[in-house]
Image (cartoon, rainbow, N blue to C red):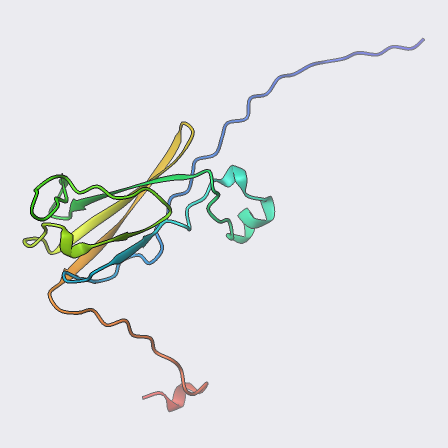
Length: 155
């Protein structure tokens, strides 16, 4: 006799949390800096990455991520940055990579600023922040190259 049975099961797979990241981390910024570039391109949706990329840590931002930027004073993160002259809360363009004119912000009494990126996709979101110390003079962008491959020659 031919016996058979069928069983149906239904599963609901939850979406993964988004991963929010800002390139560059902690770095100093000049108060007179014309433009500061903020970059959230390391942010990604794990569900939009191939398994191999997740394992290798090479996922990249997908075009469906929305990025909103905010600025706060490090001395009181509940106080938003304000525009110089108008005193209005500073607003920034949306996007993975934006440019901010630090000199247009009224932050003369602050030692540090906190820029936050709110990454969203549908109903999911993640947030990350970077603390930027503000310096009076210019900030030099230096790199150090190794001239010798021998630690004994380094001085």
